[in-house]
Length: 409
Image 1: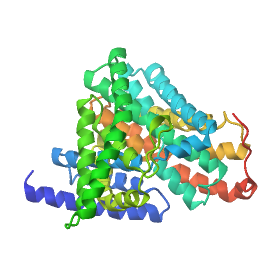
Image 2: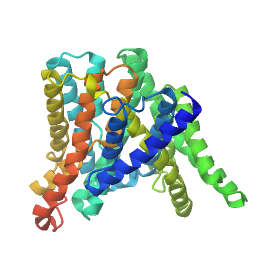
Image 3: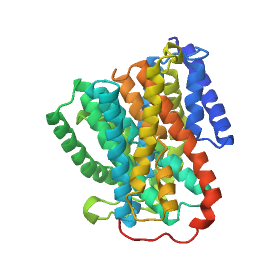
């Protein structure tokens, strides 16, 4: 690709992503759906203007790392602790059940390989905390009892999902499942999550000091991006996916961060807010490129839409994705309405599910047909639940106004 061609393609990607994201939000759908559709329109599925070339792929990978940094930055571990056992039950059940259902359907019903089935099950475990928070905020239910349970469960779901992603990454690079490699990855991930936040917090103190004395604007975002990229490199060196480094850096710099075992580091709230405010434009620049790249990588023309496999595969996994998340909500002692609302709020997959699917495609684990099926499932579980939740609260919201019981599960 010539330099001037790359500039033109990048211009088209950014503008188209923005236009379709705006249209999606005006239709009350998540912006990520619009960005994904922009890639489908620009790519081989429809217009065929842009191919997922290496230069765009590299920018998309930066977008993934920064996206996970933002997820980590918005992760509130204290919220998980405050909501207690109910969030833990909802999170673990919503993580394990879709994983098992997706694996069982893929391996025993559709006859796919062990590694492919694990990737499919792993993709179904994700919950998009960003979409969930947005919907609950729009409905003014984020501070309700069921809203607090959902947000706490989504935090734990993110952490479990990133750990599973590290395992699947190791399996994909080795070409098979190995308990020894899994144990090594878990050891590295555990050490990384303990040590990286401490190191990042100490580095942030240095960054804060130099930001206060610097006479040149832009030191803070430059330093934070450098820190994120360093941790991404370090994660790779330790045998984990690069995006794990982005997540750990975001977690460490979050104003809601505290160390394991209850040892707190007193964060500067003002500095943490400045990190979020100054990093948002950079994150918002790169992350749409990733979602457009997902759409560019999807060639819907190569899929045999008359094949029973693609429809059976997509519909069965869609059912597994929904049932798996609803199941966890019905294990806790709450009113039936609260259980339904919690279960529905855990269904959206969004950006996290797309990261799983993209890793499966890039690693050569997913064929184009399986990848298309997974993107369809992720898109539907991202697009439909916000509308269902808004209808649900419009119909039953008055009956849920009273505080929900706090009995133990």
